Length: 547
Image 1 (tube, helix red, strand yellow):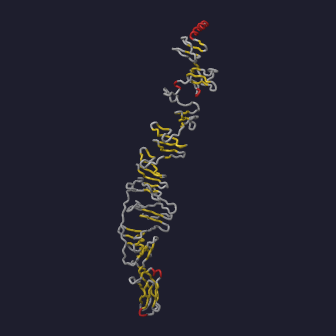
Image 2 (image 1 turned 120 degrees about the horizontal axis):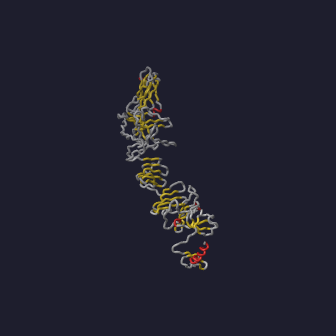
Image 3 (image 1 turned 60 degrees about the vertical axis):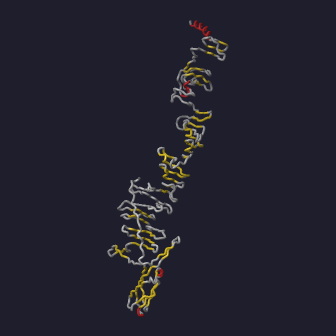
């Protein structure tokens, strides 16, 4: 029975398969095969069914041993792993040296120029599955490459590399809506950042970030989005400016000088701060615990720790103003020189100064009326120390008396007072002796050269006899001395004591600039210095620390 069916099928097959020469046609109409085809299969309602096999991987050589090159199969299995895995679809065998099954791309396996649908981010990707990079071209020029790599870890994964540097106007990485904004390679290992086609920042190969514009106080180059007038800018070469609300507040110059609230410090300043109508205090210092509100130290040569000056014409301010609010023991100013500790009164003072050889030094420059120190009290009394009146020099002149302090027998401190006169006088004392009723007294040269003796200012001589004689009289008085004679032509040999009072001679002083002062000490009841006007400064209200 089996043989019968086989024999019957031969005529039928012959009718369906026309044979023409060396090619074969398979169709239900008996049409001859196309001349250019070795096998021509045609049908209007059926297709060609390729052999179906279950491959185990793309390098499977067991399922179909010794497969011929270009052998076509339909794989029904999902098998294998990694780059050798297979999925259902058409495969053909590619012989040596490849020796693997190559899948014929299905619609879902290719990236189409009009886009793909039904893809998944985890399963579908544009790239390679072997250790080869991916390059992207336009106009057949290489633009970018995703380089090969051995993994995803830092240093082993692929990188995106550009094949062009770009420019500030056309950065290699930019945005379609802002083509002049982006990143470009300004030079080897130098990254440029541009906006509006203009380079704004540059990152060189030197651990720096360079600004490519100066900015202004109103629009500082480095600022904040919420405060565009706050930031840093470059007013000039090697000069750094700081601004807020669009106004310059501080500047650091090329030589390291710093100035606040101005654009130029004084020539000798390392740091200058200027007050204004709003911020009247150029610098304020506050301390906590035992610290210093303001501390200055000069460490080289004749440098100053703190130096203050008030320089504006007609200014009523002070180079330095200090106030201590401790009413019981506060000191306004404490100064110590020669590397010495400071000493102050237990009850406090306006100023306390300590030095090794000189506690306080005063120096005046005015060619006219001046004093080294002026002291006043609340009762219109005044004391001028080191005073030049314009006509006379005074060590000290002022209200009150001149006195000294000594000890009494009980070791108590008591006061002794100095006599004073309406004119400037020198006194001297001595002893002498009449020899045959006559004596000549010669004054010491130092005293003589500093006495002024003339008809209006005679030398006053007083003699006290210390023995019996007829009495004496004085004659031939001059700045050099005087003579004593016994009355009545007596010839006594008697000792005596004498004293003289004479007007002080004037003096001439010349300073280093050649300016001369001449002091005249011949006036009686000379004019006293005027009480100088004083100003009272009411201290500022206390402010909370840090405000």
